[in-house]
Image (cartoon, rainbow, N blue to C red; front, side, top):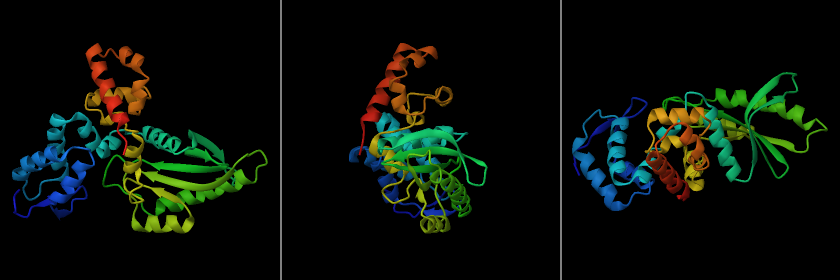
Length: 283
């Protein structure tokens, strides 16, 4: 490895000293073995220069990983694959709903609820478990630079309180509306997290709470979006999302849709094989 200190440009535009440890850690999360990781780091090292972006480094590592192990490459691309679910937030809401189902919740996506103030609120995901109901608001961002400031939980909490008062005062409801959640694919500011704690909201972002963020839950349950699949082109992924095929597990029960889209038999076989292997990998 090159001993020279190199400064890389982050998504935010800030410069940061390149860390081989961080690169190694990100590659280890893909389940790649040490031999492959060492080879990738060895090949990337001489290509580094001051001002190289984290995006460029990611592309180099992804390309090398893909040559060695498509499944590891799929896992390595997870963060970018979430961004690729856009431009609308609906596929992300489906992903969040699926994650909650794996945790024992009954879920509905895109629900209209009445508030005490006599106005309606569109709830991204409604989840119920053990007699308690939760409203989940999903803040999907297509840009890694976009973060959720304190304004987001302030607004969401006021909506939740309005819905909660109406729900819990209704004799027709069989569960108690207990808590509001906010889920984002990027991150929350420190003020947003502090207010969320104070207001009793559950906040979930890419890596918050530590060791229990979105990325950790996706790996835990093997609920990868189809945008992680290396056997699909960007255009093919877009078409499948438009057909409401969001998760790799959806692919496994949608072989007929792949045929309708005129994928070749060999192509379908590659897609299903990758999806099956990816779904079976859980931490």
